[in-house]
Amino acid sequence: MSPVYSKESYFSVSLKSHIESFFKEDDLDRNIFYNQKIPDELVECSLKFKTNNTLISGLPFFMESFIFLGAEKSCFEDLGPYEGRRAKFEEGEDAYTLKFVLPFSIALSGERIALNLLQRSSNIATYTSKFVTLAEAKGISILDTRKTMPGLRFLDKYSVRVGGGKNHRFGQTDVWMIKDNHKSYFGGLQEAISFFKKMGSFYNPLVVEVHSLDEFEKANSMGVKHFMLDNFKPGEIKEALKSKKEGTTIEVSGGIHLGILENYLIEGVDAISIGALTHSPETVDISLKMKRL
Image 1 (cartoon, rainbow, N blue to C red):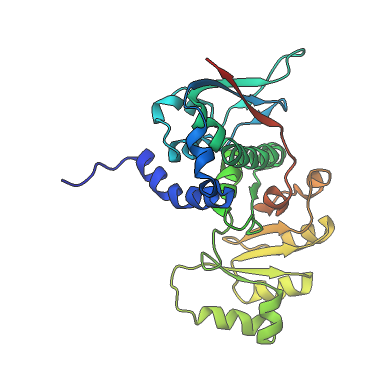
Image 2 (image 1 turned 60 degrees about the vertical axis):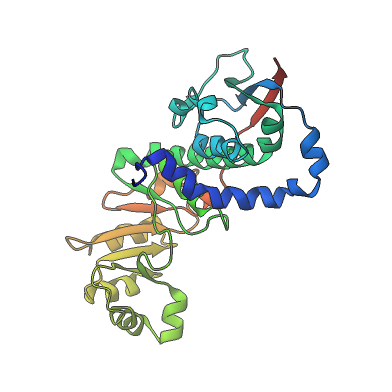
């Protein structure tokens, strides 16, 4: 009989190889004596979000880290609903706390990897949500980039989605994206466009990164549908939008941070892509404390 499909089991299988590599890096196998001697008695674990208004993200990855070590899924049945919620606490309190019970050996061995995944995910989701809150009023999407942590793109892209953002590309071949190095190598914009059109992928969209108004007008006259205006000033963006054709999209990118985001929330812009969402998000403080039962 074929196994019954479930989203939970598929998530576990797809994540297992990643988590296995994380624990190899932590080198637990090097000292078998240590592993054998850690007590298995149950402990109450207190997961503390110590930065107010943290957007909780990454709990599935956090839980799977302990499940990989042998914890029962039932240990975390109360945690799941908190994914995507805000960790808010009142004045005078020091943290927003979630509790669960694990064997001490599993809790101790999995603590750092589980917290690293949870904290990175919550960092990205919380930071992304700040951009999204400002941009959604203007109907502009906030996109990530491929500037993700090597080996953690699956986590980084997931976290952006929890924060209300959208994913640009998972890999290079999701979209043919003509950048400055393509144009330099092939001898210009027209030659680069011709190269990618000959790839023969019927449904693959083509995005052209442009660096000046002249280049935008040239690409616009060649029937390009998707543009990324790289390092355009707000005034230049408004000028380009005057020539925007029906059925085309305009994405803005290049060093845009929270302090200047409002300047780029221009009517007619479809999306703003921000590498900092994943390469340098603001950080939140999370800890895991254990108490013997």
